[in-house]
Length: 93
Image 1 (cartoon, rainbow, N blue to C red):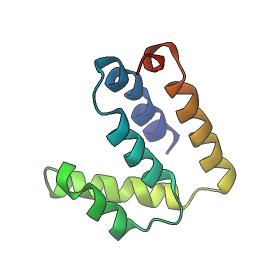
Image 2: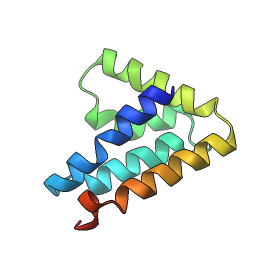
Image 3: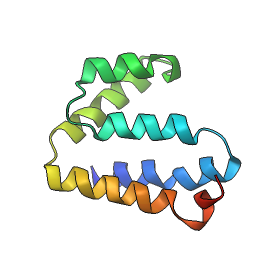
């Protein structure tokens, strides 16, 4: 789970550096972390970005992993996200 989170958040500076996708990525990460968003709603929100059934299964698994985390862990992921957004690479955007 932690590896998935690190890999997902590692891509943030690349998207921000390119100047595209920060808002979309931010919304996706927020809904991924949000424990009030269930798996069905999450997949429906991302339907346009899921190219196939395998990707949908992977995102379903990832969301289920986040739903099983404690509030403390989810807060730390949000803190990590904010640190990345305020980093040198994303500060310009």
